Image 1: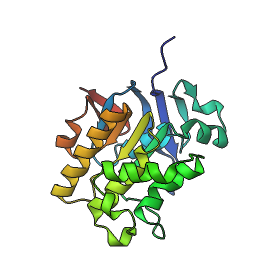
Image 2: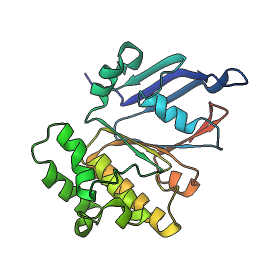
Image 3: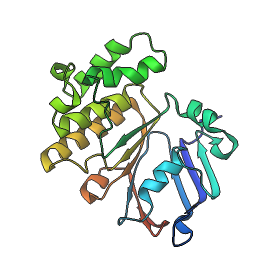
Image 4: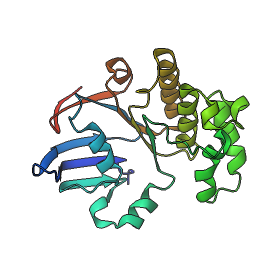
Length: 226
């Protein structure tokens, strides 16, 4: 039997409360991501791109429809079950780097591996820092690194477990053009090397164009897939 697609969103809706009343964020949205496929989500601010990632990764429960992660219906899992399903198989990279300030670059990459019980976490962290061109910066703290370097550390941390699915939410949004291009090149190169599927949220159409497929969102709906 062939392996299940890493991600299927089937008529997914998300409504959240607000002082002015319920707000529809996602509206019967359908998205499918195949193994190793690179899908870019584009659309104006407020179109639901980041909310889609939160729902797809099991960080937010939808109010309608189904989310299948590696063939598992997330609605049937409690919080611990969703965490177990993600562990080692799903990674996330955000616009803000989310590095722990009191840990060195190497420790930031190694920490999730140690939590997962990997015996050679330190060696693996050094390997992945080398892959992103930061082998000489492993003992520096985040405040000693540039924004581009911090995002490369975050990318190394995300890919060190060799996940099957990487969510990247505006990964170049806080970077200047030169660093953004370098991080984008690294991300696509390393995703191809590991065979991970990629779901990329971006406002940058040139970056989105590097993906295998582009999904356009507007007002929480899929309006175009190319």
